[in-house]
Image 1 (cartoon, rainbow, N blue to C red):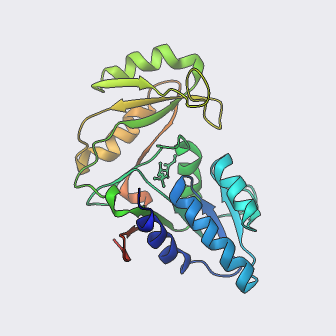
Image 2 (spheres, protein in one colour):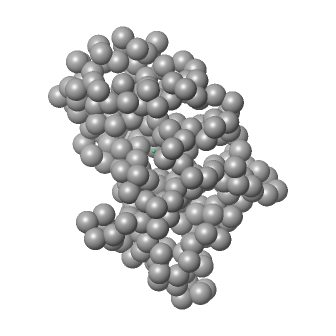
Length: 225
Ligand code: 5RP
């Protein structure tokens, strides 16, 4: 697949990064493109950039690119850069295709500004993909039953390169829950209701109130939404 949309979105996001900033760092392939571009900028301009990564993937990519790792105990990120799996017309997002939504949401909520970078193929009128829900393994059976009361389908995410379920960076399972189309006015409600199930740690619904801006990249350019 052509990755120029990711590249163009990441390149525009790079313009927001200033020397001395603390970044909240999301996860996924678009964020990795961003970190590689950031690494070039750090080397060329001698910048000092601090980062709080949301996954082992972005932790390693940040270190490789000269970002100094810090944490949420001492720092509040100035800017969070993250990807998404779907972005609707109101800028509500679904995240968690990479299974990192719990730490991603913590880092995003802790940040002063959140900018989502996507290839424009992620833009949709309304959210509709299955929502990733992270659950404690102990709660698996119970959580499936409760989530099935609201979802058309609930699937335990299976691993690749490992038999059995995906285990998140927090040691938990992921249930991909098909809630059908999420109308704008239902987005926040579904995010909250899903979290009320005991054993659910977090879910991949990122309501628009968390998101300050989205940068959508096409083959030739990128634009702020
Ligand atoms: C990981 C995520 C990612 O940001 C999302 O899956 C988008 O990934 P990519 O940039 O590879 O398309 O939410 O949990």
